[in-house]
Length: 207
Image 1 (tube, rainbow, N blue to C red):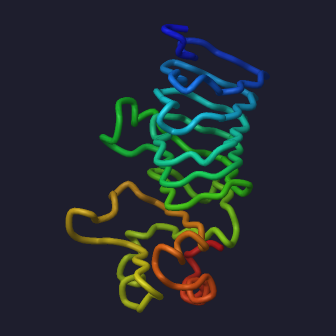
Image 2 (image 1 turned 60 degrees about the vertical axis):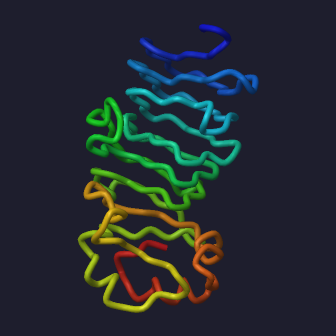
């Protein structure tokens, strides 16, 4: 611990429960060189106070107790882990050049079925080993590979399933993206029913 911050680094922890909470002016560091096995990690801090470095989580349960926004897990090697809770704009798996240690990122045999994911991306991993949340969440598999199909039809409201050109085009390493339909419908100015009808046209969209 340094200046009141909570730091988990350079160690292996097994079969423990980690409650990640701290006072408003304190930070929590996970990594570097941290290995957690069969642990329950309970996150009770906002994204701005949680700093992730290269680490390995094996057969762990991660419980997000308050919405976690725009947090990159791309330097974390996740194997056999289960995620619960609300996450928005989070990234999982190796995203080349995104952050130091990205090459250590991985997602394998993980279960997100009890999580609420919105605008969350998966990079460079085999999605066949990943359990995804069901409707009202939906996941577009290989959005870039299916780009022509996705852009050849009309979508309700302002929803754009993939961007193939320009400065805001999708990151090449993206293998899947998950949305939360109620939030996306509100952003796009449409309804959940219209959104559901649109995605049902494609067998590579998991719902």
